[in-house]
Length: 144
Image 1 (cartoon, rainbow, N blue to C red):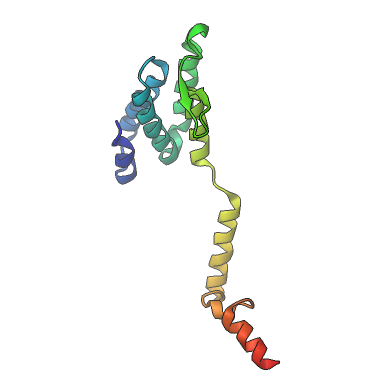
Image 2 (image 1 turned 45 degrees about the vertical axis):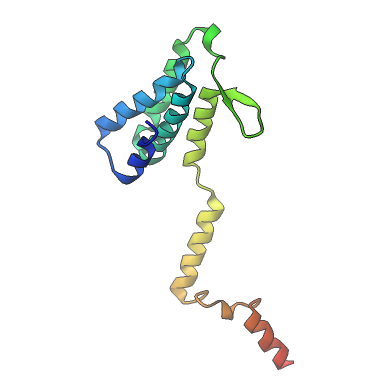
């Protein structure tokens, strides 16, 4: 299962296979004493969630319906250790990573668009035209 995320990035998979893999990757989160398998499943589930947009709702439905079927006494036993040493529930880690993998930061997108517009106009291809470039500063000193 550890190599599955690499396969997801290399090969586009048919929907039926994506659904089977997503079901397979969600199920370890609701079983005890399989921490290593859960970590591998976390990567697989995140990869599918990021790459296959039309399957996102199905994955979330699968996670939440499985969580709802758990007896209340068994909902707190799985933990994921954070980098600062604290622990959270494995399902919480899964949902957080799923959300984080699809977020696009608007600033980055806006900067890319501005850069592309500048390139289209022929501006910004050479940093020497920039007011703060070393060459431009030297030219200003020479003008004085």
